[in-house]
Length: 488
Image (cartoon, rainbow, N blue to C red; front, side, top):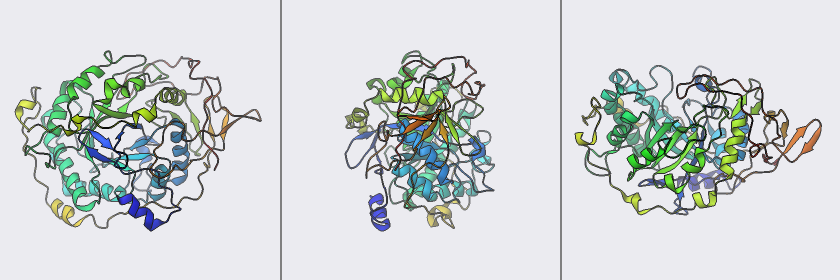
């Protein structure tokens, strides 16, 4: 595998935790163990869309000190993957990628950005499908292809967001997936999967899946089929259930898939604070036969009130009650069992042949004739992006967090650091558990006290859920002490 070649070149002192994964039917597979991989992820976009600034060269993976702080906190939370929405391919990401790699975390990257010309639009998609746009998506591939912890690329995110967009977007979105996959095939040494992140609009969801996952040629070699299918879903709110949240409909409607399916966002925030009771169900046998885990939205607190951690401009941070609640739910899971499963026989499921019969919603596009490449795009695919951004793992010598991080009660977490994991290991709860909390001049082994964080912003209406109430007290179980990270 590519990771081993890179490590030999860089030297034995370079920490390399994760094994590049492979896709086998509906499963992510660790090729060394043959076990299924379940995503236990968090959406990572510090600063929201403002965290990506092309002019200054800033993006979520450009500042190693910030990445060290966040990797340490995500390591204690227990996650094994991050989803990053907006990255600048012209910026060097070696240190941040190496930090998350050593912390045992994979990266899923969106190839688009919110800037004009950097994404396929929901309206008149043919106007945004041109060579310069595709060059940008290919540049993201180039920038991240050589990191062993790059797990997947998202060719689009919620571009189909209502029934009207189902009429025009599908052929163009499938074409972008085709183009990125063709670039990966020609220029990447390992087959990094490419796929779409869908909005949970139930009236078109299953038609969206059928459109993107059928085969135009009746075989598995169709380059326009997604390698993965992901879903942004906020249907489980508070202490809901498998049936009330409609998770049973998702499992039934997506059963027999021939690609990995997972939640690329989840975590309804009404009411607030969140309790994340869906976690136990997502990783249970009710879901695991169809879903490969999920990504909690989101790491940093923004105006939409989905944050796990509240970041300050000076680099300091404060854990929010949602961080504690999510960690409490993760701690209930048997990760050895979850990550130790062998793939089921359904991993060999074949894709259906594309046909208008697969589409059930009136007005949804049932024409599977895709747009041809725009002028100049084939040359870029053939010859590569020029100049091509390059990434590689680098040696990190200091794993300590430089910024102040506080618990919800205001006590300071001391000795906070990333703990590099062993070769081929992935992060899980308990991978790094030593730390101390300073409270009124004394040190304790607890990193959480029994104080509700009264400084959290009030919930506000977001694009995914309506506003809720903030007047809630943390459950006693959540207020128990939990350890943070070791000083190295």
